Length: 631
Ligand SMILES: *[C@@H]1O[C@H](CO)[C@@H](O)[C@H](O)[C@H]1NC(C)=O
Ligand SMILES: *[C@@H]1O[C@H](CO)[C@@H](O)[C@H](O)[C@H]1NC(C)=O
Ligand SMILES: *[C@@H]1O[C@H](CO)[C@@H](O)[C@H](O)[C@H]1NC(C)=O
Ligand SMILES: *[C@@H]1O[C@H](CO)[C@@H](O)[C@H](O)[C@H]1NC(C)=O
Ligand SMILES: [Cu+2]
Image (tube, rainbow, N blue to C red):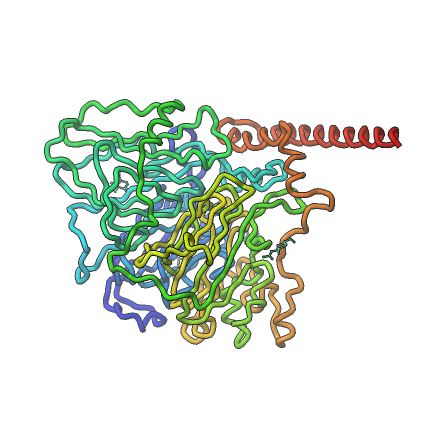
């Protein structure tokens, strides 16, 4: 459906005559069996799952009227990697730029795309995209802009991790005191194009522009095609100097655009197209988890296919050890954009995972775990006048930093956790200017030290993208230009970690934002009203005098720390040294694949937990008795 009506708030846009694509998206629950092993409820669009791919051209306008037809949950959509310049209210993260869209409400996402490249869209509310609300978003070059490379066919491919259990249920088990080490939920399968054992038919002697997207929640994947090479030409929408590889390593939310040239006269007609879960990211590898997913690329005339690769440990190790994916740190943008100048503003973030008083593991940036404000931060900007540049009004638990228009911002991220974390910045691509290799030595994490010449060997032409991996107990340093007024989230894209609070809020040029932008469409405030979310005031919903604006009484804050005497490590030892913890981790996986009655299982864990407690207190009593006797 094409029409040429252009919304008045987009009148400034330079592409006003370009195509307008109108989509009516009704999000509803339906049944699907993505891995062929388990049918479950998924969130489809207009009765279709996987949700439709969106394919437009640079300069086009996209209008998506999203209706939430689910009775029991809110929703939202984020357009991952789109800058949304001048249209921040269309970005999509709930609590940041919009309210949740409650059951029965509609919400209009209306924006112009000024980029080209490979993107995706997904729910940005809770862990909801694991329930299937995720899709491909491709922006082709318009007819007047040329691709900087040649190809014959343009094809998408998604990979992802797949859970049998619904996200709400997973969250209940994941953020539980029975999971004291914060072990991430273990997926049941790796998907290839939202399916398994897929066959892809190709033509010989043809160059495919293959756009590969990891739409998973958690694990990175290796991707390779037997006996063929990929030439990487695009990462996260940024064209790069071509790099030829035989395999890729893709974290969740990253994209690779590669050129794949098929053979002229292939001897074999069918080749394995393989995606593999990065095993070290898992805390536990259940014996029946298939880490390797075998799919096929077929030339005309293919009749027999090679057997799927074995999932036994030896063949897994052999395969993974033989892969040599390129290191994205070494990439150079095709435009050769030089290193940004020294930072005008530096944000140093140190993060770790710790328990709070409920025994649940949370993620902390500089001791604060992101706790959503009562008023979405963008609406706080719009309602706060002169006070918008005071970071305090956005709440004491939102990790908010206010940026000045056009300054060079440097983010230093020190990972004090043994896990891998792919970090994503909304509204921008950034330069990755330093990254340490990481270490398994938890006692000696690598911390960025600007006086260490090894740490400050910045590339002259750094790579740029919107999602980048920070290594275990390692650091990254990013730079970007604050040239996009808006409220932008910066967070780990392991969605389970985001749900643990691994996020900060950047309020960029708030006064320009107030002057140049508005809430994009009346449906936005209507959704807030229907969801009963306030749209004015500070993070606590207060406004009025300056004093009232600075009063955050009643805001959402993190829980108190563990009770005195319970050090975090002690708490883990307390539970983790017991069967209960192992059972807890295992159950996260187990519940998904078997029809275990969840309540029964809860009781089992509860009993184990009580038994541990009893044992501990008896031990303690015995110890006290011994001490008494000794005295
Ligand atoms: C969006 O769809 C809903 C449901 O069909 C409709 O009521 C609403 O008017 C539409 N909004 C826009 C802006 O088209
Ligand atoms: C939707 O969000 C609102 C505001 O956060 C919340 O009060 C409500 O419980 C949510 N609705 C559902 C169905 O989860
Ligand atoms: C993946 O799915 C899309 C959408 O159905 C299709 O166009 C594409 O060819 C598939 N890619 C592969 C590699 O099978
Ligand atoms: C975090 O808390 C610890 C212990 O209370 C303190 O030593 C440290 O300075 C705090 N760090 C930051 C960045 O606030
Ligand atoms: Cu993470």
